[in-house]
Structure formats: structure tokens, C-alpha cells
Image (cartoon, rainbow, N blue to C red; front, side, top):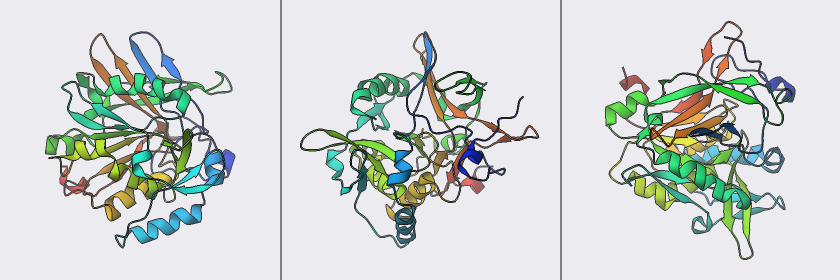
Length: 315
């Protein structure tokens, strides 16, 4: 199996060799990577690199420091159009419930840009509702087959055979499937749509603000009823790409430390792909794989243990 070269050098970052590292630059749109009944779509990153310029990393770090003390904070978003920081009312955030094949609540979708909302709903809501949702226990490693330079504009990926997901043992132990939270993201920010007086506004959120959004969302709260320790699985592109300073880490730590939730959280480090086959009723989750120069597969998720069913309890 070939080595995938990390693109982080292009932005002056040192590749990480002890955990899975995303291998592609920020990309902007959903890409259909297979056609027909067995279709897959990629969750595109949050907007573009503008998120990195608009969000102040020192602000994010300060919020994480206060999270350990259990303090609560308002939800602050940065308008993509103006770069202005605004306080967001959770009731104004666009969200769509996710249900399983038996109509049980299993999470939420935060749609992307206004003109892509219907595409998000068409792709992700049926994915959650497939009778055989293999992502409860398994993932498919996704390998970059052709880079954007050879397959413009977004490159292409090959999805490998199923392997056990990092959350599989805790799901089996509790008997409870993950709570899925789908949103577009990149290492710097999550992207949501917020209703304003005149329109829907795309806003970027740092990790702690996104954690507050999840904790306040009625569809997430409904999914948590009778589910005290269920796994939280935020399906987004690359929020944990930069270990130790990523928006995904900040979101997970704030969610566990400051919002009163005792849950394990698994944050992706690379691109994510959601596939489904209407004929068989099966859906699956692909996670971008990174392979070291020696052929070692590096983990694709950062795991944060907030539940009593932690990593040491899963032997």
C-alpha cells in the first residue's frame, strides 16, 4: 500500500507521526465520489481558509482554559460575510433531526450554505435512516487515489474494507448507538447557518461555541433521553487535524468539562465520507486514512473520554 504524503508541510506544520494526520488541503464542496445506488458524498470543510483568518486562536485558547472551571459562555459566531463577531441565540440556528430506520432520534444535521441545504438534507438524512447503519461499529479507511492536481478540482478516493471503529467496543458495552452530529468543519472552525432578520447567514464557530451549540440543540437533547453515556460522534472534516491546538479538541474538552455531559467523543482528523446503498439498505462511514512511510496505518480519530465507559474499560 502506497504512502500518502502529508500536505501539512505546505502550510509550515510538522507532520504528526503518532496519530492519524489529515493529508489534504482545505477543500470547499461536497464531492460525489461514486455514482449509482451505492453513492457516497464527502462532508466538505467549513467554508474555506477564511475561517482561519477570521477566528482568533488566542480567543479559542482562553475559552478552553475557562472550560475546566465549569464556566458557561455565550455562543459567539463570526460572520463569514463581514468578519464580525456576534452572539448567537441557539433558537436561530438551522438544524435538521436525524432518525434511524425505526424513527428513533439519533442526532442532528447542521446544514451548510443556504444554497446547499437541500443537498445536505438529501444526502445525510437518508444516510442516517438506513436499516443497516454499519457506522455504529465500523468504518472504511478512505485512501487518496488521485490528488487534486491529477483529478481536479478535489481529487479522488478509494474506500477500503470495513474495520472496527474506535467507538465499537463502547457501543457494544452500552448497547447504545452513537449520537451523530453532522456539520462542515476544518481545523479552524465549524460552519453553521443562522437565521437573521434579513437572511440566513453563514457563521464560523470555534470549538467551545460549537460544543455549546450541540449541548443546546433540541434534536441532540432528544437523542440523549434515556442515553446517559452514549457516544457522541461529530462527523465533520478534519476538526482534529492539528493535535493539541485544533478546533475539534477545544470542542470535545469544552463539551465534557463545561456542559455537564459524560460522554466519549471521537473527533476526525481527516476528510469524512458518507455512503449508502438504497437497494440493500446499508450505509457506511469513510474516514481519510494516513499511512506512514513504513506502511503503518495511523488512527483516524482523536478520542476524548468523558464516560465511565472509557478506553481502559474496553478490553
